[in-house]
Each structure stands twice: as structure tokens, then as C-alpha cells.
Length: 279
Image 1 (cartoon, rainbow, N blue to C red):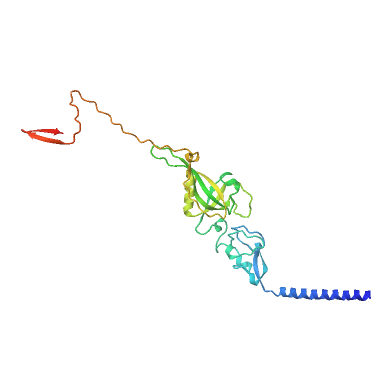
Image 2 (image 1 turned 90 degrees about the horizontal axis):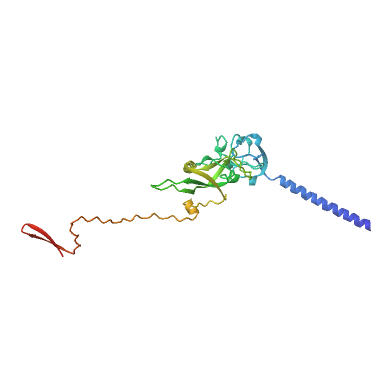
């Protein structure tokens, strides 16, 4: 009796195993039947501004229903193209991540249309202790001496002259994946042509400082700057208005006393002579 029960359990287990195997085989065959396309992906990390060569790329099967817009099917289509953003290993190469055809590569490929790149000298203080990295945004503050007025001394003032400026590169590095601070001697900023002129004038008339700001904060704040007197809370004394003091003229000897002003006067002409009578 015990042998019959054991044999029955073995047969039941075998049937369950066989059913699971059949189900798994069917599921695998269905998965294998999903349509797929070849998509070009990066086989290594590609830094922005780099020119693509075939050794940097590979192709993988990608489900047809989820192929990204702008993806490439063949590696040869990407020969000598330049990436304008960093691409990670295994990431699909998309048209939106590439500079226009004919771009030669380098930092110029990263500059947005209508913008310019300008480099300014910095130190560990001006450069925000090395935390102003490529991809960050900064404000530019200038400390300078105001023009002197007539009889006045030029006042020292600090003022924000540029806001929300993109850092393109620090020294000779434009990579944006490293979050470690880098103390460098120069920072390259992306500016409009008008802002480039402002920055060039600002660095010639005073000293510059970079102010690191939140990457998603795009609000601009207009300020009038601050002078040393305002910084220390000193009241600016108003200039005293000069008061004119009338000085009495010395009276000549034997001179007649001055007549007091009268309310009315009458001129009398008699025998060819004139006489003024005041009342």
C-alpha cells in the first residue's frame, strides 16, 4: 500500500515538472519571436566634444516598439560625428546628442547657438574653492572703483554684473561627470555677445568673483550694488549749503543818511528843477 502511494506521488511530480517545462518552452519561444531592431550604442564612455570613431560604438538588439527617436542602426552613419553632451557606456547614440554635421570637435562643439565662450582667470577664492565645475551655473560679481565726480573721491562698489552663466570648462577640462572640486587658474564661461563685452570691461576695471548658484534656479535679481559706507551702515552726510552773508558797506563821511523806503513818491518840477518827494 505504501509503495502504491509513493509511486503515485512520483507520477504526480513528474507530470507537474513536465507541464512546467512545456510552459517555459512556450514562453521562451514567444519571447524569441518579439521583433527587434539593431541600435547603435556607446561601447565606452564618450566625453562631450569628442569625435566618434567605430571603436567607441557597438550595436545591440532593441525592441522595435521602444526604439528611441533619433537612434542609428549602423555604425558607419556616425563616422566623425561629434557629441555635444557626455554619453555613458551602453547608452544609445541619438541625433539630439550630436553636434551639426561638419563640426570639427572640441569645446566649440559644445557652445550653444548664438553664444560665445570666454575664459577668465580665477584663484581658489574667486573660483568658489573649485566647486564651479563644467555644467554648473554661476553669477559674476565685480569689485571696482566708481568714477570720480567733481571734487569727489571715487567710491568702491561691489555689484553683480552677470547672472545664470554656464561654466563650459575649467582649465582644459570640459567633462561634466566629475563632482569633485578642482582648484584651477582659469574658468571658461558661456555668454551672449553682449555679456562677453560686459565681462571684458568688468575684469579690466576691477576684480571678479564667481558666485555658485542652484542649477535649476533661473530667477534673476536686479541690484544696485553696495558701497563701503552702506556695508558698514554709515550715514552719508549731506553737503552743507553755503549761506550768503550780506556785508554792510562803510558809510562815507558827511554823507546823507539813507532814506527809509517810502510807500509812494512824487516828482515835482518847478522853475526848471526837479525834486522827489516821498511820503
